Length: 261
Image (cartoon, rainbow, N blue to C red; front, side, top):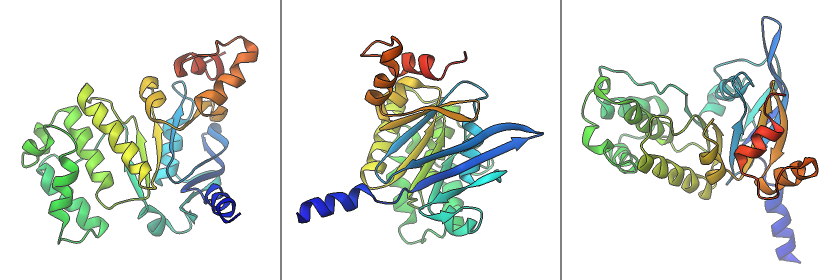
């Protein structure tokens, strides 16, 4: 009986990210339209959809770069726009175009990020080295200027920067763009380890093979609304009555459920 009570309590653990009837309009056009979803501790949630479906707008709403027209974003139960500083301390964000000050070295940039987040100086260097070691090739260039970095190395630096202050929620727009195959595998392992430690991840991506390999659930976005949501088995069950094959890949399900009519 006690085991059942503990299991029930785990099932109702509050989400680390909740979007509640979220909308964003630009010049009268709805980029995100009454969108609700939740990402639980330990979960990697993939947001996929065609160009113009509202993915990047959603990510910018979650990161606080856009203010919603309606609805709200809750990070670990905190309203992002009512208490932005408190909410953002729980958030790590990697945009689709990774940013770093080009006249700094990678290490200087990471120390700046750590200072802004209040990461203690004692132990900060060790944490930087530990995170950088996740990606082969990054430690050897960390003391070189960022303007010499390739697109892939800037992506690695952005991932390290997002994790430096030990956030509870990680939001990433296109996590593996520019990464070589080995680094893409390392990024996948990094996200899995983050979720296994109780964090939550929202991934926005066009790389459906990556989403299929790493995400526990996916939301298929179309015209700013969820066309479908669930794990692969749930999406297959939804699609099968209309003729989708039982073992359909995420790519096939995407075209079936969220592709343009």
